[in-house]
Image (cartoon, rainbow, N blue to C red; front, top):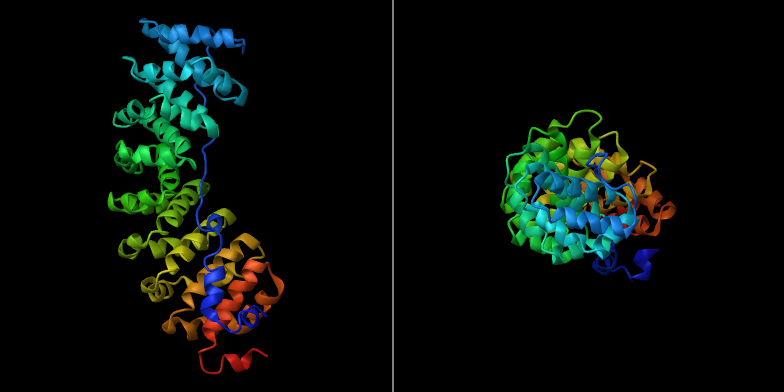
Length: 378
């Protein structure tokens, strides 16, 4: 057994396997491309020459010509091939200028173009180097609902697994408008804002700032108000929570705002990805001893127990992580042994993936101090 291999050393087992690899503790996601729509006067060819023509249009003092350029950049940037051509032709500097146009429609299309360009991992950084972030974040403070949604999408894509962008967006004041967008009357704006915050929360230096600026309360409100068929909002909120909960400084506030009860509902959601992300967040929160009893009191155990029997390996892994932490606390052990069942942990230790086997063995080791439990192992 695993414990035998570790000479019965429970702490050594936990150090080796708890938590599991970082990619199973945090989540990131880009947003899909957005469209500015077709326009009959934009160049139809995909050649670099036509992109160079758009760059000339972007430099025009005629606002209608600027609009043609911005709209065409947005449409072309939907495809991978055209993104590269736009960058090679020098189009990023043109977009920085278009962001500062005197016409809102021009600015809006420039933001859409940036959101689409930022889907490319390399172009993400090049956009920042070109100076896109300051005018982009400035536009986040405008009162145009449609603009706000596109800015949130652009920031979400630029923040995707790019450490410098994650740092710079926060340093330039991007958190404040994103948090305000969570309360927007527009569903898409709320969704993109939560997705952007979830991506920014990948950065350890941002996690506490996101909580301190007050993101959790409106995020939970958006999560609870999501109707049937709007699972994506709950996914993004659970993803953000999974990331910010990695920071120990956030743990007390997470309990104070009542997030555990919202998580319990998400753990029972019909959508598998919602359940997986909620279980990941629950496992991250359960790392900290001060949360463990309150989580059981707030009803985490029954849905986590159900997920442990889901048949979905990714979900079972997160449920097993959560239980491995919850079972460390003396006040939880009897209830876990009774409600989950020692026999089920033994079955998991024999029949699932190695990560789940290790976590199940760790649960058994934690529960072995309960009188009569070890005698029931067989």
